[in-house]
Image 1 (tube, rainbow, N blue to C red):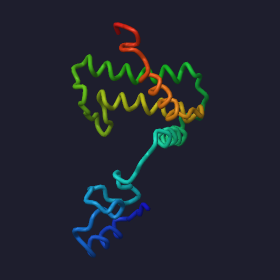
Image 2 (cartoon, one colour; image 1 turned 45 degrees about the vertical axis):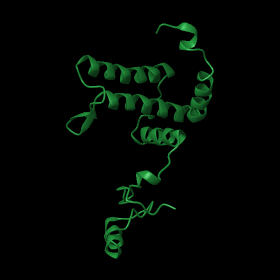
Image 3 (tube, rainbow, N blue to C red; image 1 turned 180 degrees about the vertical axis):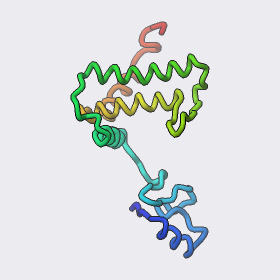
Image 4 (cartoon, one colour; image 1 turned 30 degrees about the vertical axis):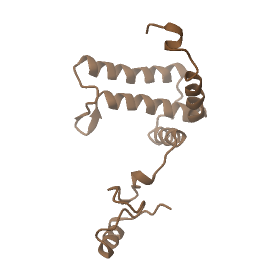
Length: 152
């Protein structure tokens, strides 16, 4: 059972035993449950949980106030991949995350943006992405090496 603490409750908890583990998982995970942020070790999010979270955030941020075509949505996914390619062309490292003010940037961030857009779209369209991924991965495991000799 997850328990959420605010700062005062956490202080009280640590006064009782300063060497106590995380109140969420009982271990020294460093993932204290403070001010509504759960211990990452105890949160098992499914792909569909992330789909729902991404879609709800898009709704909350006003991205569904005007309709978009499926083509526009796909183009926006492409745009995130293009931004990752631009960072690569500009010499950014494949694992480099940098900031422009408070905004995180870089190839990993643009790839994350791509996945978030895919998650949002699946949430909007009611696609069970987790099942679709499992079906496709199971099928891919049965395919020939390089899918029968493809070069690229």
